[in-house]
Structures are given as C-alpha cells and as structure tokens.
Image 1 (cartoon, rainbow, N blue to C red):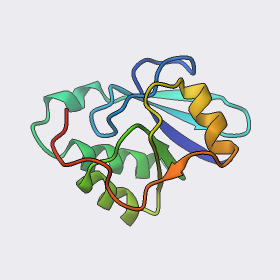
Image 2 (tube, rainbow, N blue to C red; image 1 turned 90 degrees about the vertical axis):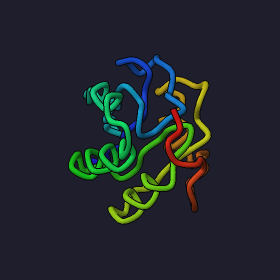
Image 3 (cartoon, helix red, strand yellow; image 1 turned 60 degrees about the vertical axis):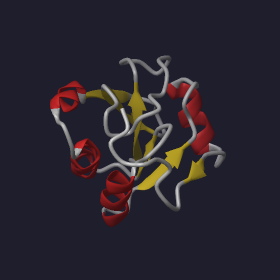
Image 4 (cartoon, rainbow, N blue to C red; image 1 turned 30 degrees about the vertical axis):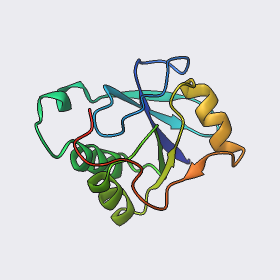
Length: 122
C-alpha cells in the first residue's frame, strides 16, 4: 500500500493544499490506490518557534509515507525528508488535495531537488 502525505488547510480531500509544509495545520495521509485517508493533526506545531519543518518531517517518516505534497519546502524540512528518502512534491498551493493526488499519480508533480523556501517561513 503506497501512502503519501498532503499538507492540508482542512480535513477532507476537497480542502486546499497548504502552501507550507512544516506549519500546515493538517496532513492527509492518503492511500494512492483507494484514496482512503486519515487526518494527522499538525496544529500544535504552530506553538513551536523553530524546527517545525524537522518535526513535521519526522512525523512523515514515522507515518511511512513515500512522498509529501505541499506548496513549498524549507531547507531543514528538505534535509530531514531527504534523509528519510521521502520525495517532496511542490508547487501545489491553490489546488485541492484530491487534485494534488491525481497529479502525483499521473506524474505531473514537480519533485523538489532543493528547498523551495528560506527557513522560518510562516
């Protein structure tokens, strides 16, 4: 079962992808075959002054996802996700989670080869 995580502003497949990776309020952990998903609440990360990207990346590694999708990925999150061999799809702000997953499955998501934002971005 291949799973991916999508940074999400809400808790459904029809909510918008959050442009931020580390400080997204939720992640939807989506089964690529069935589109079944679970919601991972990430709202407590907003109280963390620094290290949100690293902590979110660790949560993704613990969830066993093969990729994360968001708008942008900062340098520390990039390093942590890269070390865990998790692909990072980016540039998906403004689309729904369902559309982001469809694009990923079709191979139409840009996979990051470097961080796409400076650190400490809110």
